[in-house]
Length: 294
Image 1 (cartoon, rainbow, N blue to C red):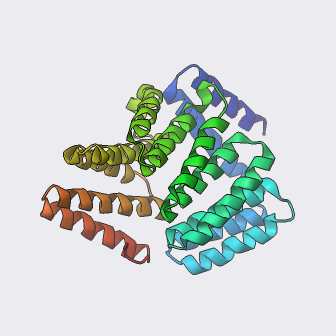
Image 2: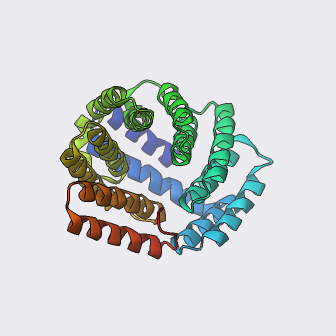
């Protein structure tokens, strides 16, 4: 444990000093050491989580749901932290398989529990998940409320710049869904300012998803502004980042981005590009054993 604490201290020091490469190396060391420690002393919940992750990788969503509900039952007596995380995990699974109302209900419950912990990273994660679930439901005002709070709960400091950039990008996405293009543009620019010092590290595991999300929202903003070529270029950039991540949820996000690429390709009369993008998206959904998008 002493070694783990020292690694965390090294990560914090490198981050505060703006030494991005050193911070990422230290973060990887922290994750590795934490993983080794967890494997030495696995809890019943951790063993079930590993089982659920494996089932999701196989596309066995029904079995994965059963296991995740077992985790809920195990975590319920302890309450707040573990239960909130278990609710988020199940919420994300249900969102992926298209059970959007159930996913949103679980997301809202997870947010309520996360607030009780007063751990702002957990509250941020829960609010971000809630906002995404609300967007999928078409509940744009509710999504905006959650995204606004997600920005507000993050504590100041250089340590949390990545989290703040994610929150600002999500806020921009929700503003766009609420027809506020000017507000979305402002929040995207604020997010970009935070990400700019890390542009050279955009392909690192910890930042790939952040940049993918940013370019997706940029694409939606360009479309709203009538710049279809810009929208096409931005979603193409987002897909480049999406391809760098692995796992079922990353593939699901890639499929959705490809469907957007198909839509923009059609709007710019690139019918061959449309066909290619939609064919690949359908192939990914088939591999994940998911229904085609509507």
